[in-house]
Image 1 (cartoon, rainbow, N blue to C red):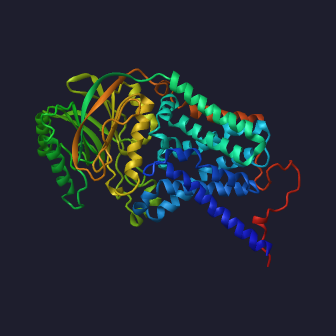
Image 2 (cartoon, rainbow, N blue to C red):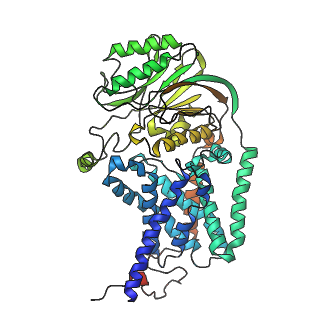
Image 3 (cartoon, rainbow, N blue to C red):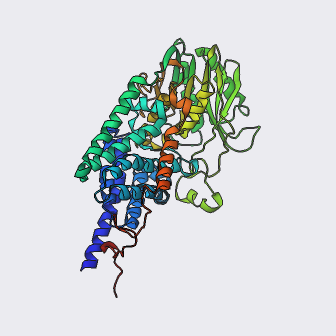
Length: 525
């Protein structure tokens, strides 16, 4: 009977871990309950601190991580099918260090010193998992916890100092302080100090961090053709709709017209008629067009996605080939081993070829403006926009297409990233898509003008403020990541965290015989 009850408890804890790990997804768009991020981790952390052994905490960290990955990426299910479950299970393991830190530092009745250490080391453990999964081969930095704060002005100011990483550290620290406050009465002083410290940090940054100095502006037109029914002639029909919408801009005096990702379906060298039509549009509206060609170039092998600038005389020669491709969507990692994914979901039938370097484009007629193109989920990578601004970018432009995920959370999640990148770099960012959501954010991350929804078929001109100067994030980069890793390394080197014995209950002195926990009793025949 004891065995049956213990197994039931273990199963309930496992289910609770998955559900608790999934809770933070509600802080991201489309629900966009940004405030929920500051309490969303509390149920999961309470479960982890009560784990009977380190082994159990590791399992519940893994399950919670899998729940988080699945919830934040659930809109991929129609494309990846069963492979999304496999992906969530693999990436979920990245939260095991976080889980072990929670149990070690928050389990039992921690001393004031251990509670204070938890406020630094537990957020650092979370950041460690985010850093690991930010590698492109594991899907990239989509769904970083700090990105849930894209519409909160004080959080965007924090991003200008330490990027999305600093925002994430503050969010997890607040969750950790709440756990101390709720579950450990003796740790109320460190808990209050932790919340107060986060508030003071945010206030100091708000008052002291340099703000972008607005200097002039740019009239940027975004062309969103909307949904086009699938079919062999879909690229041509989409091109024709974009052409018609762009013509409507004549007389509105834009400085730049931006089309979305894959807005041109054939190589312009192989189709000079398309190049002429784009050149005629440029002459008609009096501005260059930044289009995106998804095709096999005549002069290079493989299929590429390329941002191409076109003026009244045709393509200017400025071209950027997308560097960071979407795993499975644009290439299949280790295709010889994982090629079966193409038969299960909508994985790429042929690997696209990545570009070799980032590119800045001079805007014709505006010697003071250099355009920095990004393609699709490259806007999720903070280092790419930072590098472009360090090289002299005045305007960040992300060309995207999320038409495969209409009706889900993907368009809103993707559009929100432009606010973070703008705030981090102090440069405005244009997020132009084929089917919405298209929007523009100013140099502090604030939205400029109305967004174009997923139901819109429209061309709209935005008055985009330009800015001078550099943010601290552009100047110093990912220093919060280095600080977090240094804190973990220093604490381990100094023996501040006990060596984790997976089968040992929290608080048990080394060398003490440990009985098997009820949830892991061996079965009896």
